[in-house]
Image (cartoon, rainbow, N blue to C red; front, side, top):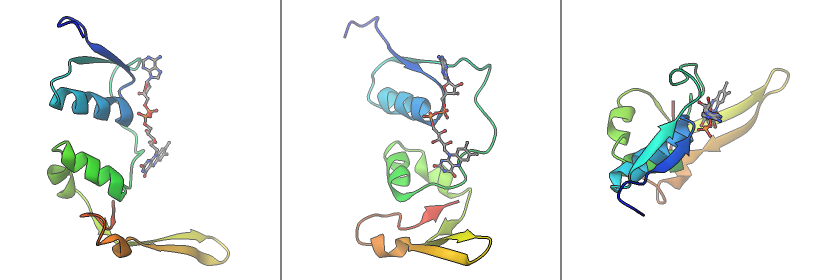
Length: 104
Ligand SMILES: Cc1cc2nc3c(=O)[nH]c(=O)nc-3n(C[C@H](O)[C@H](O)[C@H](O)COP(=O)(O)OP(=O)(O)OC[C@H]3O[C@@H](n4cnc5c(N)ncnc54)[C@H](O)[C@@H]3O)c2cc1C
């Protein structure tokens, strides 16, 4: 890659911005193009799962994030008629990840 060249990333959503951060951390020049005037501010990411938390910690932004929310080891899916129809205990992943919970 020539020293004046940059990787073009189209879209400043979570994927584009995380990719840009990962490249920047490795010293790879990049530029992010976004068709909106700013970053989308509506709520689209209420919950983070273990692999995402692992990645964000590797990128150095996990610690500040962890101060902003709640750790939820057990979460459920419900319907309005029969209530709970699935329950996930991420605590069983404790041997596999430092983040055996959903983060809200
Ligand atoms: C209501 C809602 C709730 C959600 N809740 C969760 C949740 O709790 N947890 C979770 O993990 N995920 C959640 N999601 C999903 C999550 O928001 C998406 O998976 C994530 O936003 C996808 O990221 P992305 O960067 O691929 O795309 P996007 O977030 O869609 O970003 C793409 C960006 O590219 C820009 N763009 C598009 N075309 C061009 C172009 N030609 N030139 C320049 N810019 C362009 C767009 O304007 C946009 O800003 C939710 C989604 C919605 C809608």
